[in-house]
Length: 160
Ligand code: SF4
Ligand code: SF4
Image (cartoon, rainbow, N blue to C red; front, side):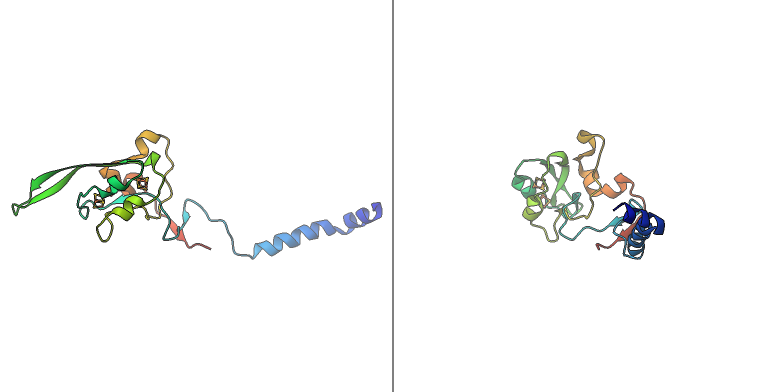
């Protein structure tokens, strides 16, 4: 055994063994990406950040009714539009995201086509320092969350 170890050291067999492993991986497709300059695109079914289309929403409150933990708060009032027709105007549309379990029942309950509220925005960067402020979404955050987060440009990397 001692002779074999001595011969291995002399011929640098261990070194070449290690280098061959490095060489094999050098030309393989990389599995890592340069986050956050590059980001992987989640699948179409991925549930991430909420989005609300205020214009499309008919203020029916079905999403709030269907939410099993009652974390959607909607208030609205009636107003006359320029044609004299009574229309509903949102006063409040809040989602307490820190308690959300991303079950998507609110999106499924929404009767508009396409949906007025949806979670499939492919956004997974929702980490925050302050739970109560950052993870409580009001109309502004729900309708303009990209601008609110000041998203920097990035390259999208397709799933491998
Ligand atoms: S995804 Fe969240 S907000 Fe929507 S129904 Fe489920 S728990 Fe409620
Ligand atoms: S279910 Fe859809 S249309 Fe009804 S209040 Fe919720 S988001 Fe608006």
